[in-house]
Length: 494
Image 1 (cartoon, rainbow, N blue to C red):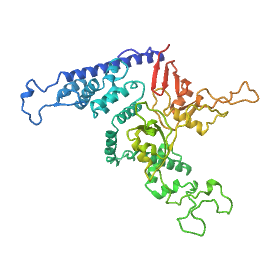
Image 2 (image 1 turned 180 degrees about the vertical axis):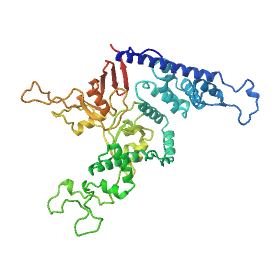
Image 3 (image 1 turned 90 degrees about the vertical axis):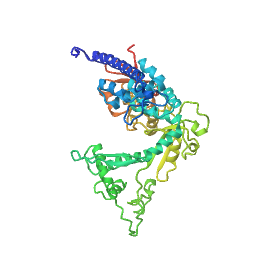
Image 4 (image 1 turned 30 degrees about the vertical axis):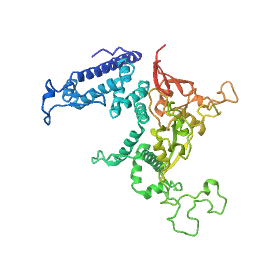
């Protein structure tokens, strides 16, 4: 045990960085040793070519993808036991090392140069085993330059996108195969009165389910439920179990105080039972009131999704595929996508998707899908108020789908739009004391998740945006980080 009691805050961070670097170097060396262990066990015995195969005997087995050398089946057990890990874990360690060394050489090199942590390389190796040699090389070229700048979730999205781009047909086959394994599972064990439900379903249905759960939770709050939002969302599962109760709660005409929707069960009483309050008094109805609300029991649930698609322009024009991905406005009917099966885009909040899957979503008769074009992200409009207009908020969220705090992976649209330079209300009586005009503008706004907004406000973090979408952060101890569309980079103290 080393002595750390005398270290101050800055010294602790410095020491932690040194320890982390040493640990990363040790992990890289461990991968090299694991690969060399495989080199030392290319056969099952000195006379392996003459031995008669018997069930249960040791055999050579592949631990990584196509083109990697086979390894004596029992060899990893010795290494694993010495390292205090299971045989299965040791097999994976050796397999990852071989996958990286033979099929992902760019990542292998960067790991041993100290640029990429070993765990990141192993995560890529885990996903490339199923690919042919040229497929693994393609993923290596796509992922290696950015593997050190992005978080875990973003790394997985980058790997998935690279695999989709290399072999969209196989990716589509895997997707259809995965669709056959969807289901809903209820945990048999009850813990403290709770049971867990696990759901694997279509991404669009999952998004719709989340929206419906959220709407029901808000409805419970309107009826007086004082529990926190997550607890109300859990209660909403019970509401869904009673479809009529869910329909009543989702009906926009339901009285929060009584739960009464004010709509009969469909029996004609001589009035316009299919309408809301509009027109019932003989007066003129506003446009919002004039639209008949659906009868109770006929309100469509969920499956209403707005897709913000970041798609290569070639998916719309049919041009070549040599360019790098770029944001492009998307047509609403999906016709430009139907013939571009091999193209890959990104559905905001869902990750990389093929144009074929987007076309399938757009063609579903039971779903209302709105495809919105990307706004002008260079828009520099401003307003003289603290509140952010809707269009400006859309611009900021599309410019930075992820919270731009160092290493943050929050891509939810539920973010706070923070004034980078704190907003100062104007003072007409004393103009020199008030804030300048135009403080609320995309160039002074950043979409921070609540935790990192609090860190910036109360935790001593500060930041600036020298260019749209590029952020320079300073920690309380003076450490600096650059965050842009490629991820996070730690900057030197100088």
